Image (tube, rainbow, N blue to C red; front, side, top):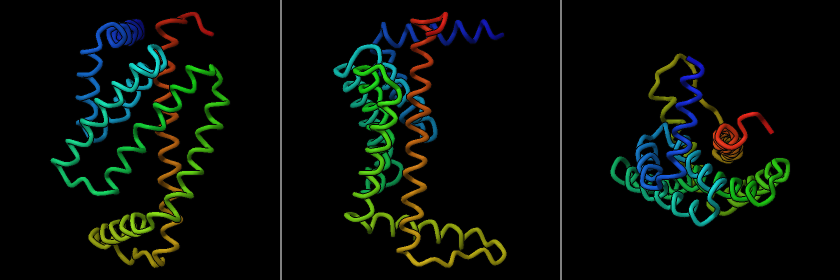
Length: 195
């Protein structure tokens, strides 16, 4: 069973690199499914790691366009939805590009932390209504759950910092997971005996 999964993983990686239409189709498919965007982001990172920034930008464009269209058709393309899509794709593409250039995972992790810090500072001070909207949505969801006495008693300014920290941590975790998945696929294809 393990050999079957290993061979399937390797075959899919080869197909992603050799057939760009297949890679784009998978990116479209996984980007259209709300909770599988992580796989589409991993494919974008894998293409960027192996084929460079120009091929990665094309794959990134396919994924972003698909996410924007599905988000527009299912909900609305508000600022918060645009920001979530942006946060899902760009940090992983950026980190894959840096990893291709530097081949140093520590440097990439440092750059990700600095980028996340800059994003937190930007989101905290410049579009504060975004975080307040997120807090109000979260508060209304909790009230609609009708749990016993579980009411959130925070001011919007307090919740703004907490929600921003949660979103930054989850974004970094998703980026690292996507990058490690792409790096694992690269290692399986090109370094099967290990580094």
